Length: 93
Image 1: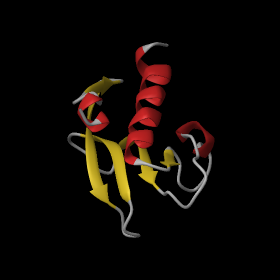
Image 2: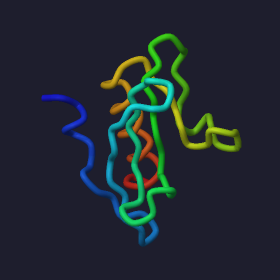
Image 3: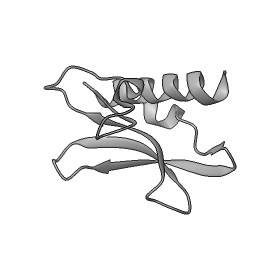
Image 4: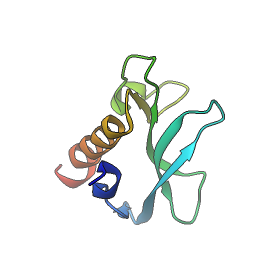
């Protein structure tokens, strides 16, 4: 089973519904994001796959230009990072 299949299919956070999106960025990188189902400009978090860079957790980007956008070495690592972030900040808090 692919780890993408294990991500929550939808999340209700503060009365808003979010679903995962898997896409290619403008820089040709894979990215997984949880976007608002109605307002696609509203996103909960994202993780881009950047094997050439050191991983950066989603929490470490808060307050910076690319806020709530982490990066990971592999797509599976990105899934793990998103799962950990969601569980820590929204489900198990």
